[in-house]
Amino acid sequence: MGSIGVYIHIPFCLSKCPYCDFYSLKYNEQTAADYCKAVIRAIDTSAAKGRAVDSIYFGGGTPVLLGEKLLEILAALKRQFAVDKDCEITLEANPAAMTLQTLQKLCEGGFNRISMGVQSASDRELSYLGRRHSFEQAVESVQLAKVAGFHNISVDLMLGTPEQTNASIDRFVQTFSDLDVQHISGYLLKIEPGTPFAKQQIQNICPDEEHSADLYLHTIEQMERHGFLQYEVSNFAKPHFESRHNLKYWRCEEYLGIGPAAHSFLNGKRFYFPRDLKGFLARENVWEMVEPDGSGGDLFEYVMLRLRLKEGVNLGDLNRRFQQDTAPLARRAEFLRKHGLVCFDGENISLTAQGFLVSNSVIVDLLEYC
Ligand code: SF4
Image (cartoon, rainbow, N blue to C red; front, side, top):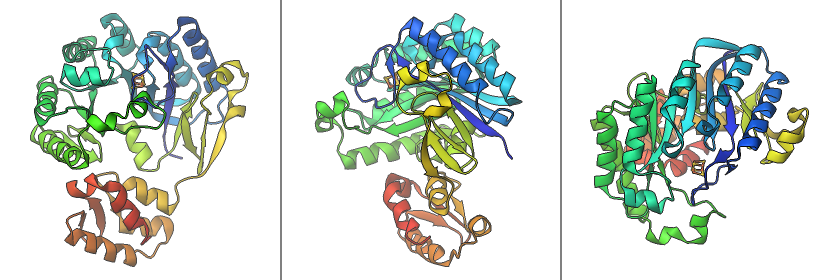
C-alpha cells in the first residue's frame, strides 16, 4: 500500500466571503478548541491508523485562526500514522488572519507549505469579493511567511471577477514572481447557487464568457513568462513545487479527510462527513457519521481526473490498469488534436491551453470513447 494524504478541514472563518460555498462558520474560540479535541478523537479512532502519510493539508475555512492548536492535531497525526520525515504539510491561510509569531510557531512545529487566499492585485476587485484585506496586506503576509521560515508558498488568484483587467493579473503574477513565491492557483470565479453573489446576480457585472476566456489564456501566458509551469487546469508551479497533496486527488491516489464536509478515498471507496459541525462535536465516534459516496478509481473517474493534469492520460497505463481497448479513445484524441484541443503523440493524451479553456466539454467528449 502506498502513502496516503490526510486532509483536515477547519470550518471557521472571520466572516463569510460572498462567493464562498465551502463549509465554514463564524469563528468562536471555545467552539474551535472543542473542534480540535473532536478532530484528535477522530484521528485516534481512524481505521486508517498506521498508514504511511506523505502529505497533510489543513484547509477550510481559515485554519490559521486556530494558531498553535493546529500543532496538537499535527502531533496526534504523527502519533497515529507513519508520517514521512519529508511529508508536505500545508496550511491554508488568509492575509487578514495571521501574525508573524503564529507563523513562526507553526513553521517550527513542522508546517512547511503555506497557501494564501490573495485573489487579486486590485483593491477594488478585492472589495467586490468581500475580502477583509488589501493587496498590500497580502504582499506583507507573504513577506511574513518568508520571515517565519516558509520556503514553499502558494497564492490563489481568482479569475473572471467583476471589472478584472489583464493589467491587474500582470501585477499579481509580477509581484509574486518578484517575491519568489513557488506556486499560484488561478481559479475562475464560479457563482454557486445560494451564495450572496448568486442572490445579487453578480454575473451581470462579471466579464462575459469570451472575456473570461481571454483572461484565462492571458493568465497562462503570464505565468509561463515568469516560470510558473501549468500542471493542472488551474494550477501553476515552479519546477518541483507542484502541490503533492492536490496531485493525489487528480491522480486518483488515496487520501483521508477529517472534519465536516471532508471527503475521503480509501481502499477503493469514497466517503465523506456531512456538513454538520454540531454532530461532529457531539459524537464520541465521529466515524459513525460518514456517508458512503460510491466506489472510486474506476476507468471514467481515472480518465476524467487525469485529463485535468498537464501530464494527461497514458494509453499504455490505461491498458494495464483497466485492460481497456484504447483504440476508440486514440482515434478521438487524434480528431481533437487536429482541432487544437489536445496534444496526442499516439501514447499520451493531454489538453492544450485551448482545451483547458473548455476542459469540461473536451473531457466529457473523450469519456464517450472509453
Ligand atoms: S476565507 Fe475562504 S473559506 Fe472563508 S469564507 Fe472566505 S473564501 Fe470561504
